[in-house]
Amino acid sequence: MSEIFDFLKATDRSLFFFLNLALANSFFDYLMVLITDKHTWYLPGAILFTWLVWRGGKAGRIMALLVIVGIVLSDQISAGILKPLTEQFRPCKELEGFRLLVHCGSRYGFPSSHAANAAVIATLMSYAYRRWTAFWVIITFLIGFSRIYVGVHYPSDVAGGWVLGIALGLALIPLFEKLQRLRWSKTKPAA
Image 1 (cartoon, helix red, strand yellow):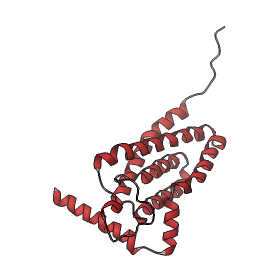
Image 2 (cartoon, one colour):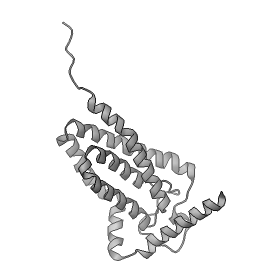
Image 3 (tube, one colour):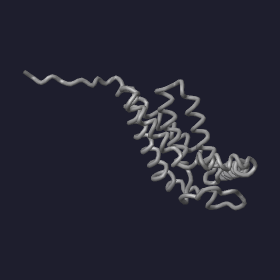
Image 4 (tube, helix red, strand yellow):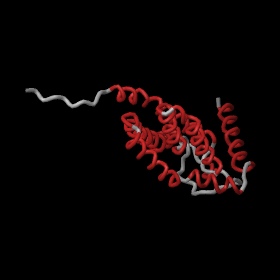
């Protein structure tokens, strides 16, 4: 069993070095730092939230609420439960000879909270607005890739984040459906 674990760990590190070093170029250095920075997503997130609430109708308002719930859940589960439980160090905490383009972050990296948050949003939004699925998949991929490229996560951290985010998104979809069917009507007072 330890041989399999060692093989997977070595493969993870090899893939990390390939994505971090072999693909390095000045354009990606700029773009991936921009994509990985959570502040980059505040304005687009605010615009999306405003659109969902203001123009999205009942489904949009429900989705806006569930996106917030999904982000809170994915962030708390990844950072508050799974990272301390797995104690998998980030590459920037245990490796040498790679490129670190941003601040390393906390000690542990599995699963990536960035990847989990992006995946839960993508899963929910793709369900509610299917014609935008390709857009959400690309954004989620770029955020995950950026975390490896800038040197703060292993590929397994990102994959784990994606699995967590997708699972949470899928778990919230029945709630979306139930809230969609719920009638919001005022009850008439008894005469």
